[in-house]
Length: 276
Image (tube, rainbow, N blue to C red; front, side, top):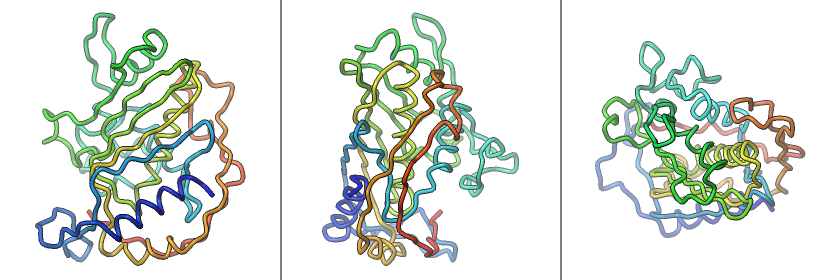
């Protein structure tokens, strides 16, 4: 059984059985018909994925992991906030007439900051510290810049990464303020698992753990029947992840630098409504 499946099922069952409904509260998200999109949630879910043993991708249904990698590279490599530089349309609903999502996500990672060693953006500072200061307990990034929130089309959901080197092993903590379990949970897990592999490879390190901390893990009201259907599936074995051994530069990775062998998944044809 894929551990990603096990944790996803465990999280969803816990939410459905013991979660809190927000139906008595005013909520921001809406369905396409204008109806409030209410959720049942759990606070403070923590999942641990041992990347050296298994790539954490769902088999209960297909995760379009290449598209997830595209978005990851758009944010972390291109440091872009314009959908014209993204393959796919997942951000179109939040983009303005020029294609910008404002000072969000990739924009924040690309801002230069002054350090004693010189100017770095957040990504390059991580790369510098992993090579020159691996014992540091200050290797982290944050996209949640309060000064710029008013210029963001959407506040960052997965907003902070903390990297920690133990021996020759790179571990990381992903902090997420909000998580739509059905549409985004494994999408984000896959993205940040790939990111840890990228930073490890670029720094001559081995991958260790990815710890995913979710403040508000929720299932939307109209997603519950779909989640219940997934919970009836029998998990399949996890696939094998491969990263291009010839790429050592963080900025030289592309979507074809990664491969999953024997990725099996259950068919899931139901259309998933999206709350905006």
